[in-house]
Image (cartoon, rainbow, N blue to C red):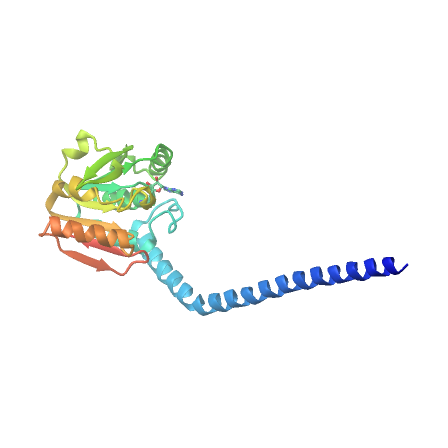
Length: 253
Ligand SMILES: C[S@@+](CC[C@H](N)C(=O)[O-])C[C@H]1O[C@@H](n2cnc3c(N)ncnc32)[C@H](O)[C@@H]1O
């Protein structure tokens, strides 16, 4: 009888310990969530501000391009509206003939439509991923822009510069024979290797025309800042200008 009572008390004790641990775990989670919410609430005005800036840029871009069909989703993987507006305005102002871009997508449509509106220029878009290359080609056909742009399958290959290895686009003879008026660098993906977009410097900057302009997206990232510094030291005639874009953008001329 005494043994049964003891077992009952021990079981009760264990149960209350388990319950206390469970309650402690739940209370701790609520406590952490409250900090998280407070944090989000404090950042909310910044998020709202950023969204408003992109909406304003998108409205200007949309009006300028006057497309029949919608652009693919912007931001995230694609360039942001402010960067695309910068590109579209440059094409309208400078009327470049040869436009080369590293990585295809929404930017290809923006550039090709801008060239079409000018009645001059052609976009050559290097794309390493056959799936996205085809997706961009289909989007260009839908927008009636196939005559103003060419998506080039450019698989990544090994390069080496100053003892550093890179995976970067294979360049065909056609691109290498071009004199580039406008160069947009938004690829390849940054996670391939350190300073993934660096090879555009030694491989494409020597192909620039006299009055050419280069646009580098994601320029707020440490890798991109390092890339710009090395390019500037190797091409001392280049002048860099920072643009107030969501992901950071720098133009070089
Ligand atoms: C930074 S994205 C830029 C694409 C393009 N310049 C634009 O503005 O849309 C670089 C690469 O991501 C890949 N990509 C494009 N769209 C994607 C998506 N929705 N999800 C994952 N990867 C994507 C493509 O291979 C592309 O070359």
